[in-house]
Image (tube, rainbow, N blue to C red; front, top):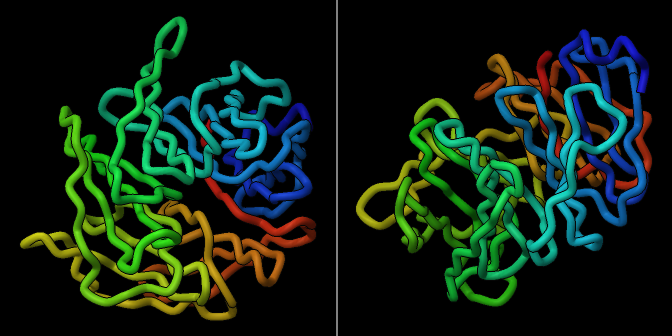
Length: 263
């Protein structure tokens, strides 16, 4: 990691085979690569700029300081972690684990965790909204109908909401601008979803121009940033227009996750 990385806004992109690339944003200059993972996948960051990397085969979640090259800590206990999200109200870290469970790590000296199950789900991706409500997407590997699950702030059980129309592979999920946005990992569509009357209603579809697929995307200052594992780049799109404005490429090993960390 270059020493000056800590002074800049950074874009972290995980690749399944090559580690986590760190770019100066928006200049696209590579300032570092984080390695020593088995399979780094989902990324998320907290209000302090600390970045969490889910290492699915390593069964760890590894935390780095903004621009740091050595881990602050390694969190264990989540089975096959795929994605993560930080609660803006409490600082809790939710980890989706390719199972019927979400693991919630509470910050503190030992970062204790608890497991919350939804026996009907197979969770891959998760997000918090500004009120601390947790949402997770079920990818339908084991069931005929994919859906979105909500764990309201302070609750202990999930409520499931069937999508108003099926999505081939329900991928990344983010709370944004009063809606939930979800991606389809089999194509370039991003869907805007509103939950009402026990249904996750798809109210708008945005194709990402120039992309073949989406994965774990993020929002930053009116832009949507998403890896395209089928094309080996991460793109920046105007949202909801879907116009491609910048590419981050030169990576190897299938880009998967993304997060922004500010100094």
